[in-house]
Every structure is written in structure tokens, then in C-alpha cells.
Length: 129
Image 1: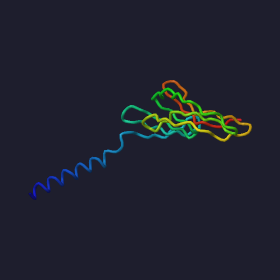
Image 2: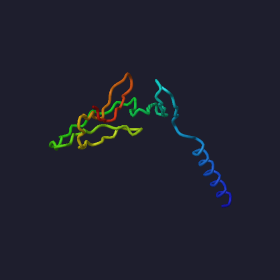
Image 3: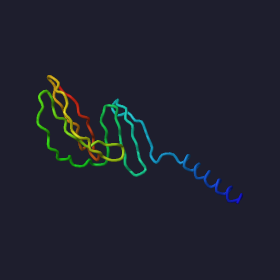
């Protein structure tokens, strides 16, 4: 019985050590592109995500088509910010649209994805003059 307890304890300790020392299944690199800092996440599954300080992200996974949503009736003093697919580091998740208080002299540019070569670039929604 004592021998079984020692063997079991040793087995568990080795398993925990292997988990603790194996490290993450991805590599993170910080690079500079045209003066902008970028963080590159290279995952073990072949996916790469590049996160730039200027607010957008690039991924190799094409976003799903936008959902068809009935826009609520217009509200005085507000603009509709449509829903969009956001990348959470693993999958695209849908973010519902919302009403935003209008800004005098500015227009709302919705969040959107742009194809750039073999990657998809996400731009956050923002106000423009």
C-alpha cells in the first residue's frame, strides 16, 4: 500500500511538472512597422493575430457575413451604430448594434473588416469630421 502511494505521488508530481514547464502553445513577438508598435501572436494551430497600437487588428480568419438585422426606428439626436463581428483571439463573436448620441459636425464610421492581402483587418467604429 505504501508503495502504491509513493508511485501515485511521483506520477502526479511528474505530470504537474510537465504541465508547468511546457509553456504556452503560441509565441509572442513585438515588432515595429512604420513607427507603429505591433504585437504578433503566432499560435500552435497555425493562426496568427497581429495587434497594432493604432487600434486595429489583422487576422487570417475571414469574418462571417454581417447578420441581417432590422434597424430600429430613427431616434432624434442619435445615430445607429450597426452590429459587427469582433475577434476575441480565437473566434469571431457578434456585437449587437446600438444607438449613439449624435455629435454635431461629425459622422459615425461603423466598425468594419477590410481584406488586405491574405489577412483581414478590423477597424473600430469612430467619429470623423
